[in-house]
Every structure is written in structure tokens, then in C-alpha cells.
Image (cartoon, rainbow, N blue to C red; front, top):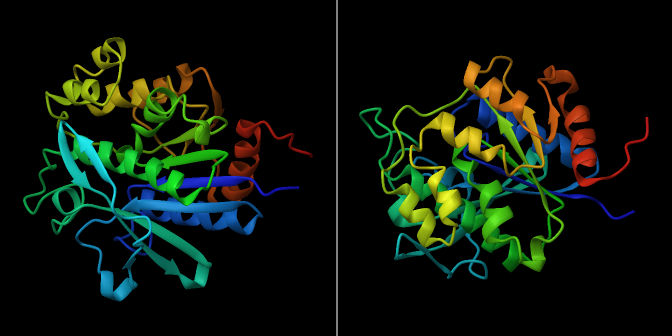
Amino acid sequence: MEKKKILFISQEVSPFLPKSEVCLSARGIAQGIQESGKEIRVFMPRFGVINERRHQLHEVIRLSGMNLIIDDTDHPLIIKVASISQARMQVYFIDNDEYFKRKSTILDEKEVEHADNDERSMFFCRGVLETVKKLGWQPDVIHCSGWMTALMPMYLKEIYKDDPHFANTKVVYNLYNDSFNNNWDKRFPEKLKFDGFSDEIVKEFENANYNSITENVTKYVDGLIVSSEELTTEVRKAFDDADCDKLDFVAEEHQVKEISEFLDKVIGTEVLS
């Protein structure tokens, strides 16, 4: 039987960034799913605080060179890769000087969220999809961790819905007790419209805060996973109200098995007990 292909995308992956719930979870689940027999690819943003020399990042020339247009401006897409030798995993990095060169991740040196986090999220999600196409690798499921990946389900189900490369690809989003405080740019709906989203969808993002984005993302997913023991009332309600396959929080020692079986369910593979 052909191995199922799982594309893991996360705003953080250990050991490239300081430890956090998203960072450790994304690494642990991806590694565990690979060891369980599935084929994986892992993508994250190449934030400027990542030490390229220490982690031996190098550019993948054959995948770089595309330009993505965000808000009517061309942005070169650079792809880098590094290995986590002890896990026998490769991690691909989405890079661009304007969005990711700065020596920070989500917050600046004053602990204020970057004003262009909306565009960085758009660039990251589109960059992953275009790179996977260039790789010629068709994922059965895209598994998303961290709010920087929240737009992926919408891109997959709307902008790429007629792309044969993703014709059978499902998408799963992980819910964490992790959020941002400041609303995204007021022009975010305009940027979505420029990208080709319908007026009906664009209207849903007139007030683009963490809760509204989370609520909207649940409309486009095939599966939701609770990845934090506790969620805010608003995020818990979004999970409870969602009309899709759902997996509530699972203790760490059982996560890989439960999530692997859940991904099989989302794909449509029968799970034998």
C-alpha cells in the first residue's frame, strides 16, 4: 500500500526556534507520524532569528526563483532546507528578505506584533503550496500549526480548488492556546480580494482579529485538533460548533497514535482496530 503523504506546516518547529507549545508539538507530531510509516514534508517560515550557520540551512536553487504577488507587489520566494539528523527529518523554510529577514519572529524588539503579519501569513501559505507543486509531491493532508498557518485552509479550498495537484488534499488545523493581540491590517480584506477571494469571503474578514480568523478558518477545514489542554471560551466554541471531523485534546503519550488515526479518518482510510 502506498504511504500516505502528510504536509506539516507550522509557524515554529524545534530546534530552530526557542521552545514553545507550538514549536515542540509540531516537531514531535511530525517526527512521530513519520516513524509510524507515513511520508511527510515539513515547512516553516525562515525567521531572521534562526541561526542558518548553526542549523546548516542552505538554499534549494531548483525550488527558489518564483515571485509571489501580495497586495500588488512582487516578492521573491526563496526556499531553504535543513536536516534534523537525530529525527531523520528535513525541514523546508519559506524565505523572503522583506518579510522574514528581520531579527525577530512575530513580535519586534519592543514586543509589538509586526504590522505586516497578515501579509507574512499570506506569503507563507501561498509559498508552501507553490513549492509543493514544484516538488511534484501531492499531499493527502495538510496539517497546520500556529495562527500564521490559519489562511491555508481558505487558500486550499478557494484559490487552489481547481488545481489538479490538490484535487484530493484535505486540510487539518490545530487549535492552540496561542493568539495575537492586535487586529491585522485594516486593508487585509482588500489584499484578500486582490488575491482572488470573492466579495462574500472578503466581507468575513472586515474585523480581522484572532477570534474572527479562527472562527472563519473552521468553515474550510476537513478536521480540527485541540492541541492545548485549555482553550479560550471563543476558540472552544469555534471547535464545538465546527462541522467537520474533530479530535479533542489527547495526552502527550497517546498523541502520535491518536493523531495518526485521525488523519487516516480525514483522508478516508479505514482504521482497523
